[in-house]
Image 1: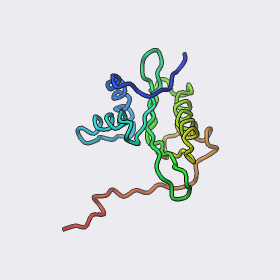
Image 2: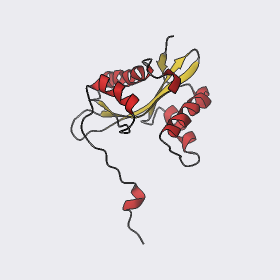
Image 3: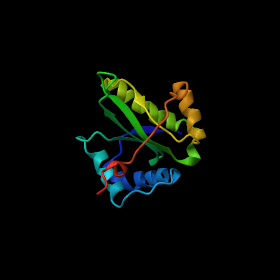
Image 4: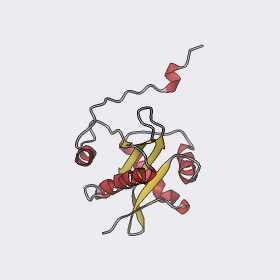
Length: 155
C-alpha cells in the first residue's frame, strides 16, 4: 500500500491528535491542559517554525513527524531539529518512519539547512535500528537537560 507524506490539513486535528496521544503515551508523558491544541495551532501557522508532516495511507493518518529549523552556532546555515516521530505500532518496519525522516531531509536540502538531527530514548531499540541504518550510527553525544524552573533563583 502506498503512503503519502504531506503537511496535515486543518480538518485532520482528531486524526493527528490520536497519533500525538499515542506518541506521548509511548514516552509516558502528560502535557499541560491546552498544550496539544496550542501545538496544533503552531503547526498550522506558517509564521511559526514548527513544521509537521504526516503519513497517510488509505485516507487515514498513520504517522507524524514534527521538526523545526533554527540557527546554528557551528554553521552559517540553519540546522533542523526533528523533535517527534511516530508511526502506528502495527505498521512499524514498513518504511513509513524512513519516509517521514526522508521528507524532513528533503525539506532541509531544499531550504539549504546544514543537517537534520534528533534524539531518542536509549532503550528505543526498534527505532534505533532504523536510525542506525539511515545515519550509520549514533553521534556519540549524550543529552543532558535542565528544566528551567530548577534554575530560577529561589525566593
